[in-house]
Figure 1 (cartoon, rainbow, N blue to C red):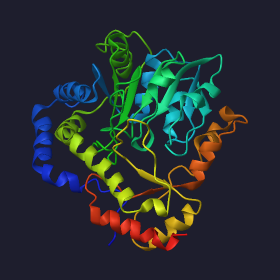
Figure 2: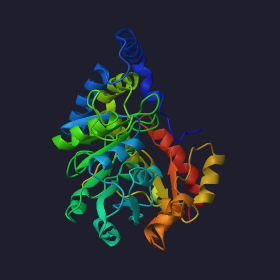
Figure 3: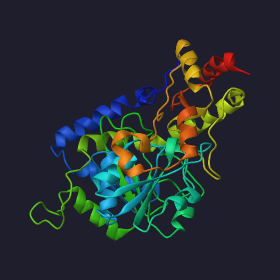
Figure 4: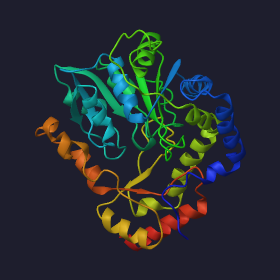
Length: 361
């Protein structure tokens, strides 16, 4: 049985009529940018996350850049960020005019700890970007205790819960991506910024709209970064189903454990108190490339994501210096994403685990 790495379409099949109606509603209304659908989605998403404000933006990368600018980050500032993450987590820092300073991660959880962040602090550190990678929960409160604002990169963590709340409502500000493969996916690009700081939320709203409140007077040099009405309407249809989809992703992770996958590869460890809605289910094994080949031959979708961590990517080398990140290097070398989705079945999980069996011992 072939098992895809992603299956974003199956959960949407029962929602097709609602999705068509939502798009038609936008077409009939004639408002396509920052209209009633965006306003309604922002209110609904903020409530779902547990923050006072959600501000829709064009994509998850710009969400980070705009949020950092809202925090006052700019030239001359350093921002600590894990190297084992998607490139955009650091790219957005550079686009905000600041310097990324790379920290390590725990390869068992794939997230940075307070000790990792502390080791990377400089006198110029203005903020920390903590990544809730693959849907796990980074220790935001512990890092906040270091005395710096924490931006939660929650692009892969919609629907996850943790001991201090949901990603996006724990730190000073959170950012989300609604890329189609995400736990909550649009039909194109989209993103959001969440915060419970009223003043910061207002600053971010101004920044996303050319630094203006009315496109007549301008207060800042801002961005043209807005969530489209059509995408907001599509996301509104899906949002009520996110808790059930997230619970299914978490259950699928437990199925892998119950099926004995840990005999063949190291499973990701949820951080204490977390119930991750796994965006990706990423295991570790010394022979991960050979495993990937075997799984592919069996029709199992799989792939490594960050074999070359961000600090070793050519455009980032000028910022990396001689930094040594052993946890990052281990995670990069050994990780492999295997199938998970809001529609994966227990039988499919069994097929995946069976394909690992030749590697036992």
